[in-house]
Image 1 (cartoon, helix red, strand yellow):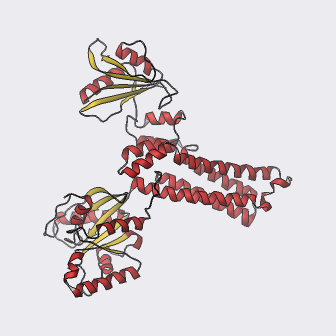
Image 2: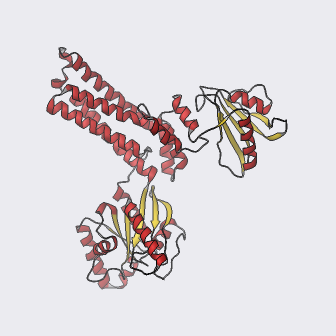
Image 3: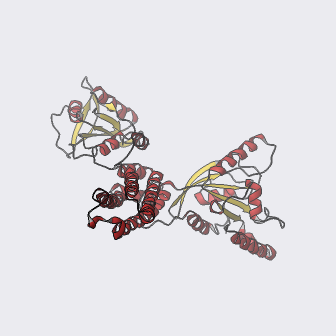
Length: 463
C-alpha cells in the first residue's frame, strides 16, 4: 500500500503547520528529508527539512509513531513546521518528490478502520467532533470516539448472536429436549429483552442525531411581521436588515444558533404576499421552496396587525402556506406581545385565540423581538416539539445509525411474530440473521464499499 501524505492543519498563517505521512516508507522519507539516520518512536526530534539540492525548506519537529502503535496502524510521521501556505506546500511537494502520494479525503481514518484501530462509529465520531456546532455535540462525539456507542452496539450484537445460536441449534437438533425453544419460553424472554434494549439505544440515538444535525427552521410570515427581528434576537447580533419598509428582505438568509443545546439552522425569508416587484417575487419563490424543506416552521405574525377580527392565526397560516401545516411542523409566533397589555380588548382576544390554537393541537408562543420577552419560552417549545432532551452523557449518532436500528427493531418484531404466532423456527432464525446484519452495519461489521466511500469521503484531507 502506498505511503500517503497530507497537510493536517488548516492552511493559512499560524504558529505551527503539521504534515502527516502514513505507510511503510514514511520513516525512510523522514530520514531523507531531514538527513537524520534514525528517530526514536514517540520522541520529538528537532530537524531541518531539506530540498533535494540541500537548501533548507523549513525547520521544526519530527514525531515518529511506529506501527501498529499509531493512529492508522502503520508507520506514521508528523512533520511540525511553521504554519504558512508557502512553507507547507513546499514541504509537502518535497515529500511527494520522495515518493509519497496525496491522501484522499478521510484516507488516514479509513486506514485506521481497515487496520482495526477504529470501528466505523469511532471513525465517524472524528468528523463529528471536528464539525460540532455546540459544546454538547463535541463532548458527545468524543464519547463516541472513545467507544461508548460501539460498546452498546456490540453488547446487542452478542445478545443477537446467542439468540441465533440457540435457535439454530434447536433447528439442527430437534430431538434434543433442552433446546425446544418453541415451548420453553426462554427464547421469547431473551428476544423481548433484546427488543427492549434496542428501543433504549434507538431513543438515545435519536437524541444523538438531533445533537449532531440540529434542525432546519424557517421563519415565515407576512412582510414586517418581525421575522428578521426574531432572527437577529436568536442570533444575538444584527444579521438581517430590519426596517419599517415592507419587502425589505428579498432573499433567504441563513444563520446557525444553539438554543438549550439544540442547534438551529435558521432561514429568514421574504414576507409572503402578492407583489409586482420582480426581485421580491423571486425572493418569495425561494421562501416557499425553503418552507417545503424545513423541519420546523415558525410562522411569525404581528399581534397588533396581522390577525383581523374575522380571522385567526391558523387561518392566516392556511392563507400563507396554501394549506395548514401539520402541528408537529408548525410553531406559531405571536410577535409584539408586549403591546397587548396596553389594550384590554386585544389582550382578551389574544387569550381566546391562544386557547383555540391549543384546542386544535397547535402551539403559540408569545414573544417580543424588541424586549426579548418569550425567547426562552420559544427555545423550550422548539426542543419540546422535536423531542430534544438528551441525557447528560449523550452519544452522537447519525441518520444511518437510526436507520440501521429501526431495521433491526423491525426484524426482531418479525422474529417475535414468527416465534409466538406461527412457531416457525426457520423464519425466526432468518429474521434474527437479518437483525444481526443490520445492527452490524453501524460499527462496520457488515458494510458495503460504497457506504464506506461515502462516509470517509466526507472527512477533511488530513484525516
